Length: 113
View 1 (cartoon, rainbow, N blue to C red):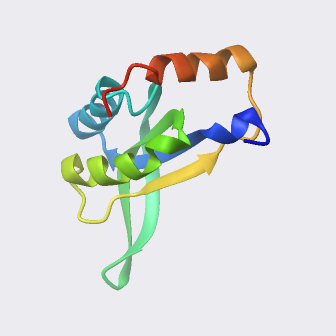
View 2: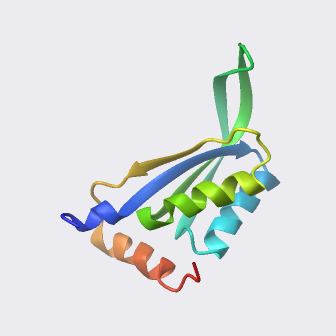
């Protein structure tokens, strides 16, 4: 890759507050699909759903991983997520503190996938 940081990505997932959010985070870290998942316990989301504007209190999960795991995450999360259509968005990491980026790599190194 041209730039070593091109291998890293953040992902955002919204989920119901509490156990559903924790289960998703634990699953991704346990399977070594994410080096770390932060849970922001409460965000208020407004969105279009079934022809009307709706809103919910949700948790926001922010995960750090390598791009090579994006497709697997896109398959694993909907299987354990309670929403019919769940938010999973990836954002490339353009720059970061090298020791932290190296830690992401080392945390994901021994994955079985």
